[in-house]
Amino acid sequence: MGPGIHLTLHHTRATELQAEAKTHSLAAAAHPRRPLRTRVGWTLVEIGLRLATPPLAASAP
Image (cartoon, rainbow, N blue to C red; front, side, top):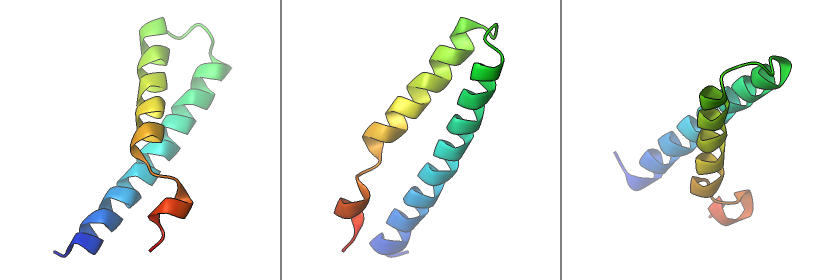
C-alpha cells in the first residue's frame, strides 16, 4: 500500500469515529442522567479526534 492509500484509510476511519462520537454525544444530551464517566469518555474521544484530524484545507494536496 502506498502512503496515499494509508492516509485515505486513516481519514475514512476518523470520519467514522467522528460520526459515532457525534451520535453518542447527541444521545448523552438526550439522556442527561447517563453516567458521568461515559459522557467524559466520549467527550475525550471527540476532542482527540479534533486534535488528530488536520483542517480540510491543509489535507488537500
